[in-house]
Structures are given as C-alpha cells and as structure tokens.
Amino acid sequence: AICPIGYYCPEGSSEPNACAAGNFLPYVGASNATECQSCPANTYQYSPGSGSCFKCSSSSIAADGAQLCTCSGQNRAFQPEDGYCICKPGYEFVDANLQVSSEKDGSYDCQPIVRARCAQTDIRLFDGSCASGDSYCETFCGSSGGVLSSTSGTCVCNNITTLAEICDKDCLAAATTVTCDPLG
Image (tube, rainbow, N blue to C red; front, side, top):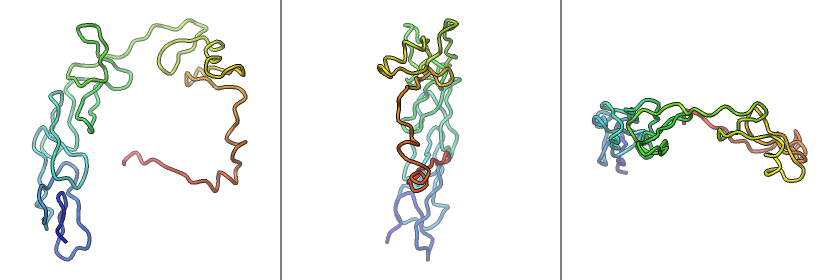
C-alpha cells in the first residue's frame, strides 16, 4: 500500500505515521519523518496528518511550523476552523457605526462588555440582561412557576421530574457515559 498524503511510512511499519500538527506532507509515498514540512510563516495546521496548511487571516500572524495563528487585536480568540479572530467571551467590538461586531473577524482590540447595574431586587440573567425573578420564570416554567437562580441566571422550575425519579442509582450505574477530553 502507498503511504497517504500527510503521513510517512518507514520501511517495515504496518501503520502510517502522521506528520505532527504545524506540519504538512503534500504527496503520497513518503517513508521518513524528515519529509514532513513545517507550515510556512502566516499559515497554520492544527490537525496531524495533513497535506496542506491554512492561511492566517489578515487579522492574525504565525511563525513557521504554527499550529494556530496569533490574533493582532487584544482580547480576541483565534478560531482554527475558519481562521477568524473574534472577541473573547465577555468582550465586544463596537465599530464606527456603533454596531457591535464581536463575532466578525477583525484586528482591532475588543473591549470589556460593560453592563448597567441591575436594580437591587433584580437578578442578572445568563445573557447579561436584568429581570425580576417571580414574573420572569412564569414565562419559561408555566403556571407551576419557578425560582430565578442568582448563580446561573436561569430559572429552576417547580414540579419538574428529577433525574433520580427517572433513573435511580442502579440505572445510573448501568448507563452509558460520555466524557470530554479538553486536549482533544
């Protein structure tokens, strides 16, 4: 079998070896790790075993062999899927027309979102707005009502069937679990 693009196959190996992230190999049949090439400056590759590199957007830069680009503007986060630099959570960019464009690619600094103080009896919601607990939760919970959590900014509805009522400890012990690895 011919070794695929993005991989090298040393003589006698049974499985292809992926070129590391930040590198690429644009042809088939490679047999040595030295054939993997570093992504050139201002390009990146976040996946191992790739045949090419992605170009950084005009709002970011990268050194040779980069896995990700670095955003030019402060408080921006690089998005490897599309190469955009968008505002980090809790930050926003307001353009010259006073339009918030935090989710758009850009090189200008993003500023902290500053919200008006809620009234003393109100609770800050998950979206940053303010609400009075009693009336707000009737909309989401219906006639059974609920309590607005000051911790999460969401409603905890009354008369909701709990997990323990649906699936006891034996059921939970037998249930399939899913875990997330933050490193991929």
